[in-house]
Length: 322
Image 1 (cartoon, rainbow, N blue to C red):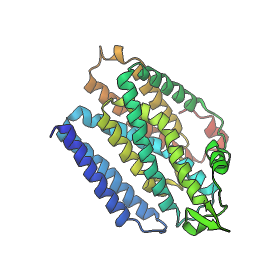
Image 2: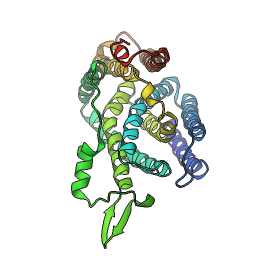
Image 3: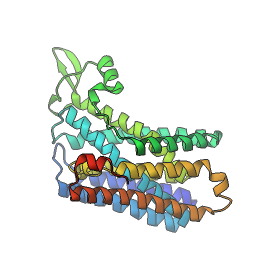
Image 4: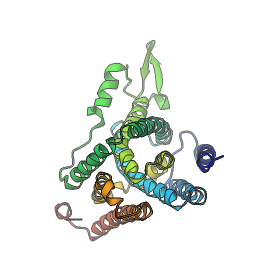
């Protein structure tokens, strides 16, 4: 077997065993997950991702391993934005706490399937039309710029989204959670509960976020294995991260600016790769990318915590510059 085949095999085995462990031992049906349990599960998924990084280093070399960990950190930081929207969806549909773990799990499993399809199509397009990378680069620069300069926070209402409107027109929906069921029968009519709607919305919203994250990962690495594994590991950790951060995610006021800087950096790197490669070798560029991601993401989180601890008024914080 080639090193790539060995890595894919190990990844597949790890994935199956981890899911069995997480679902069978760490999770029980309709059980409310505590902060402590969420912390243990977050450590579990992060440790697994870091362990895979060490394995890739020994099996596939230093460069590919650091491309993987850079892509994983990029996806992991973008996951916090997902969590904020997930919280709004659960709140809007009044999902009971005992149902959240199961609904979140199913939504994430669907998101993984959609992401694999999305990545496969994206990689195939890039292999066939390499100029698409320049479109991705320009898109990331534009997205990062608008994210950084955005001053108005639009209130997100899940009931006003195109996804919900489509489901409301296409399916007969019940206005309750069916006591934990996804489909119920009332007066001889089959109805889809609010839990079913939430699952579909979680998967669809994650796919929308993938429009930013997957091009960003392609800007870090073109290796299919790096793109698949970093995405899947990051998405699998979403559930535990949700329960860990749902009470504190609003405290990261400046994380958006940190992510925006990283997106602009990766976009510019994609646009100028031809010229950059003449001056900087690939290994050095990988370390530079990892350094930028670590500094921007950790810096924006610590800065957010520092500003919140100082207790500055909201209008002062909004006018601050990262």
